[in-house]
Image 1 (cartoon, rainbow, N blue to C red):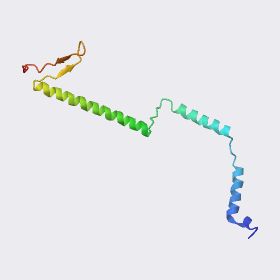
Image 2 (cartoon, rainbow, N blue to C red; image 1 turned 60 degrees about the horizontal axis):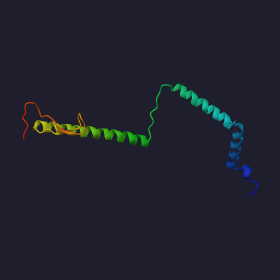
Image 3 (cartoon, one colour; image 1 turned 30 degrees about the horizontal axis):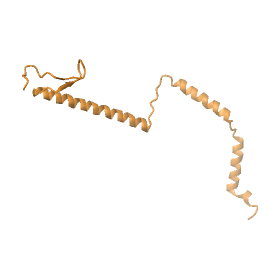
Image 4 (tube, helix red, strand yellow; image 1 turned 90 degrees about the horizontal axis):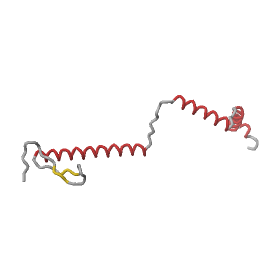
Length: 118
């Protein structure tokens, strides 16, 4: 079987592919970089005023965590407000922390017209 490779179809196709690659003009690295930089500059000029939102798993996680913490804080504040309202309706005033003069604990006023117990 010696000397028959020139007659095989796969070898002939390989040689033709080599010839085609020689015909295709390849650009140098410098020319490619210049073309790429020009394309990026054109894209940047076209996108002036457009803000692209970046989505990565980490950023998505952080956004979700922040939203969850905000919902939990609002829920706690609402529960606190409802607790204080229910205590006022029953005539017991919860302590108010802080206030003018700082640091002291004062008693909140109950609803108007309700006598304090005690």
